[in-house]
Image 1 (cartoon, rainbow, N blue to C red):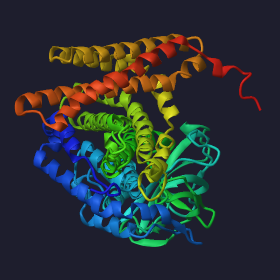
Image 2 (tube, rainbow, N blue to C red):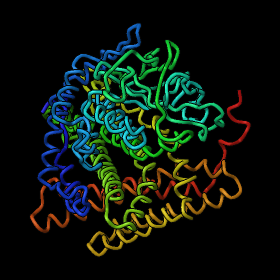
Image 3 (tube, helix red, strand yellow):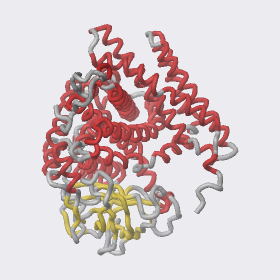
Image 4 (cartoon, rainbow, N blue to C red):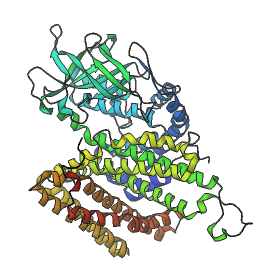
Length: 604
């Protein structure tokens, strides 16, 4: 297989799904997913991989070079081939595999949606982004929209006929959503209609020729509303106004793209400045109740942040696949054992120790991130659908705790794995002749949008660790310790012991930060990112141990394969290479250095 052709490690996906997570059994306990079995899930994996490989991937590089264009009327044209790929995806019914069947979806669980996002994003990040944001907007409209709009509009979006966006950010406000200035006033002429004025920036999929209409979800402030997030309401603002009864499209609404952002990556994804009311009246309907806009948007944040984490995983996953092909194609140098022999034959670079180290780094990080992200998606599924109330409550707490870790670790490490891919390709990796440089550019945004990773760390340390008197963290620690004890009885004595020490180190860091926070909040939050990273590396270590335990049992039952042996080696590598970071980070956190807070630094 050529190192420029998109491939995917479906063997690892199937192992993670059915051997490690046992999704067919655990989701089968939920009535919502009782009709799905392993054969159905495997067929979905196979069909989605074909769509990604044969339809999305071939237009990835060309879409990156061409980018999007904007006409004078505020209409965006996407790169060549995107519309045809979109239509093929629609025809196959893949635009919303998780949506309810009665709304044109497949009714699949989130854990299958995780694979959908990973494989399609790895093949073509820009094109997949139109899918992800649209379906997220549709779910908000379906849950909170006006009764006459909710179901029909959501169906239009889920089936890919219409699109959707989320419009939060404004110039100068950035992540500080409460600083939004967009206004909404009741229309004097139409019942339940509002007139909006303002400007939103960084709007993914703000316009495109993929769909016939776009419904923007816009945060705005109604008359008399207080400042800050508590004063924000949510509105659905269509590109073309339509009759709620028939959904027949009418005149152009006053929501126009004013500018396309010129970006480092994801160039086939239209990132827009959206003007509301600047070229004529901009009409919209309120979604939910007045001044509850931020609550409704944050209701979808777990889903969105898991999704971005999976985008990071996708970038790393694709980079590893490209690299593992390239190292067998690229011949350079001789074996180190024959370096003094002038007659020694040149060898593929896969034989060089440092290249193998980089490949192992990629492999271990990708496979543990995949297990972590897929597990969280499955946990979210069960938390929503399990028949037992106590089980649902506990799993909701686990999702809340781990969402910032999955978002941050997968986006940071996915980017690092992509950078390592460029390093493996060498000078060629820095050119557009090979696909890894695009992955690096496309992936960088993931640690920034949907809440920067610094904000994720603040959320983890300042909110999630304190919820219910620390219950979320204590439950995780108890479960993690139980896994360590079980692994020790199965022969993983040293590896499990190392993970146990990492868990203790995270707990010690948490206690120290809590103590510091009682006297100085800035000093405590200075350690938010280091703490999240230490916690995250520990969670990934749990996945490495769990996968090794499963692999060992499979080897005992059916014999050793290279793939299964690789899971045992993954654990040894992870214990030796990454768990020491947790111990060191904990020590650094507890050392309490605050040099960077000195007012003498960074003055103008």
